[in-house]
Length: 187
Image (tube, rainbow, N blue to C red; front, top):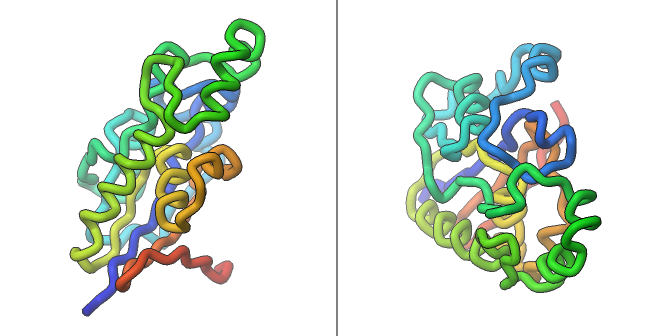
């Protein structure tokens, strides 16, 4: 049986990302994008192009192909009342709530989605790909990619906050009886 290959790509940089803020449904930073001609050339022939529903994910996916399929499971973590706020602002205004969220994967003091709920959502979606061979390219968000890695590697959920995903960063996963992280040789 042919393996399932899943390439997870982080969307391009946004103003909120640049300012270290929890994401909004904002567009890509056009100045940053202009300095990166030929984004994702090596993925232009992938038959299954997927993306999260947010504008930044859709815009990045559009750079890679004509008709990306929007997948709700690839949506960014819902940060509730913290959308648009920076960690520095929260350290000043809600330090106990921020610390509770960092310490407890089930906590959602912002009124949105907890880390454990995000990890379950992403894990459930990964399971749907296990019996569908082929190469999938999914443009999504750092928190979603982190949740995928936590699931694939069987890490504690607290590990999620120890993984950094840069704009346009790519993670390659393969499923052939089990999910595996595959590190590529540089081109």
